[in-house]
Length: 83
Length: 83
Image 1 (tube, chains in turn blue, cyan):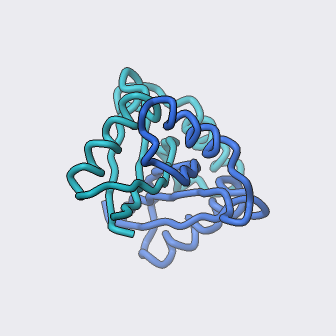
Image 2: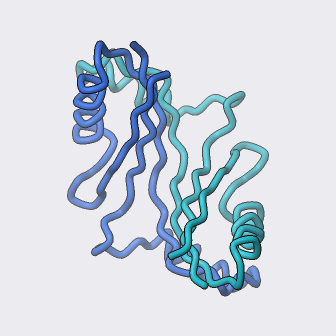
Image 3: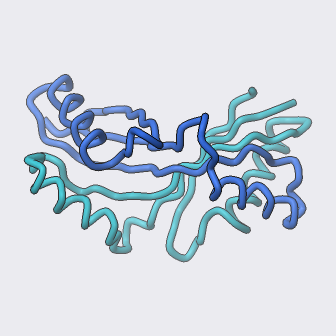
């Protein structure tokens, strides 16, 4: 079976997010001062071939831990749907 | 009212995504050859003060068009929830 994963990798809440901070200030210059607390991370989509949703889930977890997210600075979550 | 927006900015399907391609090849080296078609974009969360969901939505649209997404190379979608 083929599954599609949607993964979000975000900087940990406890850490400063300089890119987000820069965008928050830019919003003011654009006349969008109502926008605040911008945080910027990565959105990753991928396809995975697996025999069960459980197997797909463990592979995606492995991919996140080994390559996609740096768990010292980032957290991740994902959703899996059958393609 | 305060709203929370979750925005995904992805490279257009028609365009090559070099970062995604690089990660797809790396998956093979990690023993995760079942993973393919990786595409990498941005995930942005922000808070917005607005009087209605409709107003919040038009502000988020404006922010995406003016700053967050380059519509020549990227597409965006978002969800708005009341915080």
